[in-house]
Length: 330
Ligand code: DGY
Image (cartoon, rainbow, N blue to C red; front, side, top):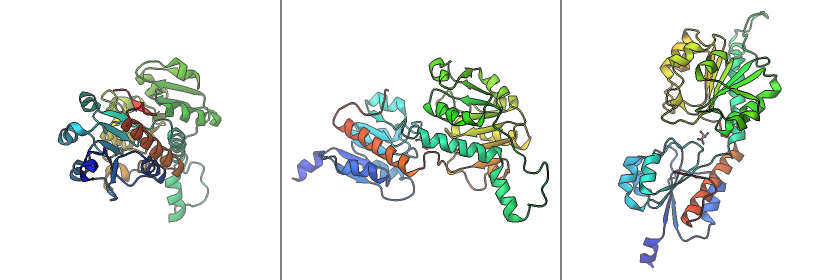
């Protein structure tokens, strides 16, 4: 009996995941053993190495790289990440070792788009500052220019990265605000996608120059690493608002800080940073014109359950040797 047990495929889940995902794994009826890391902080590397056998169900905070893959040896067959982003996974290493990768696009698009709008309005209308002023006695008599922010109607909205579905979802939600024009930059023009929101393709410099609101929706890749840097900020208007809900790595944070303190741009709203969590004494936290959220774009109960379920179904399909519902072609 013990011998059979040893040969069962072993699934390792790197964190306590939403119930819908766990239910699918537990009720799969497949012969496999499933272990989870039950602690709250991200799993420690040693535990990850000890825990992994054949299949990993991981999160965006677990680095699945060369070191881990080497230590696990040839037994690892499937990685399923409960995220749309996969910049924490070394694709090169997975490809070399014939490891399949599942991820969770689409199911979080609505939640991410909603949060992007919330962050944009919070930043552009200075809501955090205004609430603080109201609470702390800064609310004097009504003053014509006090707490003035930036308005969406008649503005030009720039989207960096329209290839990912979030860009279109954000634009569709912004449209009713009376946007004058949508423009976008990507590796190449994407006419079919752009047609959905009547967006015009422009080079990155023009995107920076013309956007009143610039929202970053691209994935983090070697090409987009630090793409939002002093060159880009120097082209932006002093009244423009910068929003990032993709990955912190696309922004050079020192350059962003300089752009915000020098008034090169008006304000920034970030849901993602480097590192995460951003240390509480980080200079960006000291700026009134910078709103920082703790990577919560997909954080609604229904979306997190949908992501957990999709990641579980990807994993089980991989285990059965079937096509995954959402598999990244490596
Ligand atoms: C993802 O899934 O990659 C998102 O960043 C989660 O919010």
